[in-house]
Each structure stands twice: as C-alpha cells, then as structure tokens.
Image (tube, rainbow, N blue to C red; front, side, top):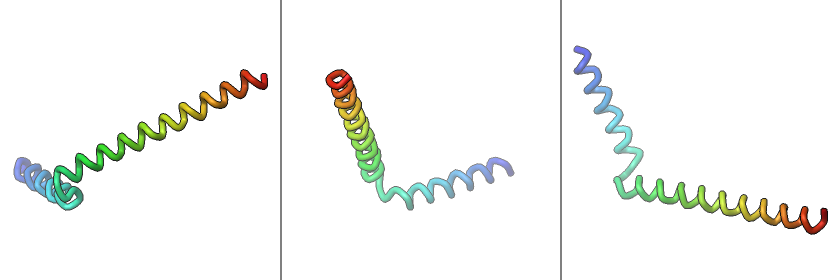
Length: 60
C-alpha cells in the first residue's frame, strides 16, 4: 500500500516537473542563465568594491 502511494507521488511530481520544464534543454539553459547572471553580479560587486577601495586609498 505504501509503495503504491510513493509511486503515485513520484509520478505526480514527475508530471509537474515535466509541465514546468518543457524539455531538458530548457532546464539546462535556465541553469546556465542563472549561473551567468550570478557570475555577472559577482563581477559587478567585485569591481565596485575595488573602485571603492582605490578611492579610499586615494582620498584617505
């Protein structure tokens, strides 16, 4: 009985995931875009901190 419930639950979750991710390629592309944006944000923050540090050294 429990096995059947687990199986139905997994099947339902698989269907939901399939509806949300049209294809595996879309899912991979979404991950790629996420990490590209994360890297870009990290680069912007690093550059901003570097400029701030240079300004403090110049003006300080």
